[in-house]
Length: 364
Ligand SMILES: *Cc1c(COP(=O)(O)O)cnc(C)c1O
Image (cartoon, rainbow, N blue to C red):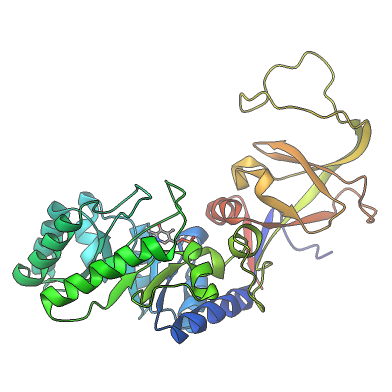
């Protein structure tokens, strides 16, 4: 064991992120699709943004403007995209540090135009079309077209970059060729009205990739916004049945140190009421098992059931803010105090771990 490491430690393999991004970007390019690399899940880490850019992403994007500002201040040359609708309070910063943003409100777009005029700068706008997931975007096709024409004909600094949609977030609606065709049809209509092709017809995020790999992506989609698949890459193989050869699932590894090992019952002793978070969990009585207590907790990863022990003989039992309890009875390793147990993870623990100041980060 490397005695210099401090724990809990999140080990981030930049080369694996690069390789994941390269596979996705190349596959997209084959189909005439450009990719925005989404860095919100890694707290905007510039080292990850660098790998996305190196792999050929057309833009670096985040829902948090501060993360884009940070990149521009470090003199990143790549174009940046804000993928959450801009707040009124961030419009000035938006035009300074983001080249493109997703939008659905005319008031906001007017404010962007004004701020651009002050800065003597252009800003690209992608109008969002809500085809059913019910988060951001115009529901009315006509309203979106009117807004597109208004930008095209009346605004000087705001440029109509394109249109886009978002799926499988609030409404859990699956991207399909049917709902994405609504977007490409609308793009065709706008193209005819303005007499030029839209640079961006954005068909969603990671969950739209199965369509691409199955050959069902409508040909009018020319842009995707990808984070998860290029980072932890759990959604496609584990949840969507789309396994892509050469893609890594171990670019992020959580390492936590053992602070107690004891044989303990699996069913709590005493009158059961509430746990540390006010829940009433259900416990299964599996007799006495060998358990290890790790110095890492929900404050660091929020959902322990979204962590995956690297050792198949280790099982996650539960946790609280600052502790994780694992069952090591079936492991072939002889664990002792001070040993380190490792975990792969889904997107949400990655998000929390990357933004926690208490979790050390190590790039390998
Ligand atoms: C987060 C986000 C994405 C990227 O999602 P992934 O699942 O990480 O690929 C794309 N578009 C919008 C609007 C988002 O907020």
